Image 1: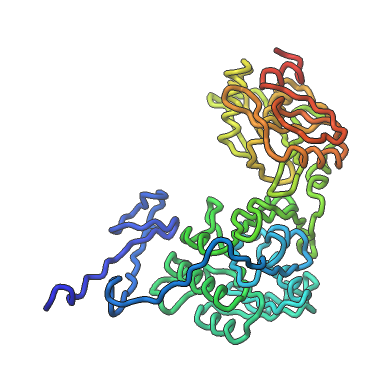
Image 2: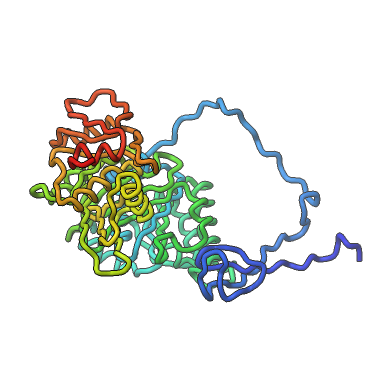
Length: 460
């Protein structure tokens, strides 16, 4: 038999169900993520007859220039301003959206309310649940006051049946809850496995682009907070949204981390009530509503989330430690960033935190990832350590470099406008910060961290 006619031996791959990494052979522990007993064998993809690039000729792909004039994609608003904001201004037909969040955080409630809002706005919405029966979804709809919304329900996990139904009905919006429960009869793996999740997501995204149906997929998250399954699913979809919040707080944050049709890192703020999720139009006032008299260890940070300015309170507590290694407890902030700020305070300003327990928290369950929060974190830490309250009418923002210098940040004008709207009259910011129009705010410009300690806390 000629060599080119011989059948090549299929190559078997082994994939980690936790992180999606591929391995040449089975092992008990994944080298990529360190998880145990998560590597499974996957059947190879069949190339069929005419394998190889030279065996069959494909069709030519039409090409176009960069100067083609096309209308922007039309958008459909739900009437829920916070949801539309995170989507980039509304729902784009044919888009694929992935929504992830912790168990019990309210993903199904949010999407049922969103489906009802889109349906009442004129869209044909279909809600397919793979985790609940239709009767259970109806019970939730009645509790939320959505029983009269023209949303069509279905309960199915077979991917082939779901695609056939969507192809026949041709809705404007289809919500699939969740992608980890779907299974394809063409993949020999259990539902929720890497192969099944990848196949289901690929088929649904392809269907959305081909038929112009907007599809929202619900994704489970791992204990690290990442969406379970292969990371390639996040690359397939147009928008990736995380629904965040602390169980002890009623606030919920809808955060966009990827959006091909709008700004990333945009947030929408909701409050969990007995009647479902209520929109919060002014999150700054909500996160600062519990502030009382000025106390040591509290600093107000003027931050930016996407395109929205948001004021949050950073709280610090510094206490003597009886442990050999003092505790460093951080909630809502990057612990590595906090450790860097502590090191800069000790090395550049001579203010040690050795032998002291440090506790940091962002009020209201908010998460702050901006480097612009460095100055507010340092202010809260120094205020707690020296037992001196910061000026109650002041907001802080600025990035701290390893040399102790304060670096300017973006969108200073928007930060100042939001602070002034909420009654703040003073801002502590880097000396090099360019501001076009302070709007009546008093600006206290500081060059470095040593100057901040001397001016605000009266120490050199």
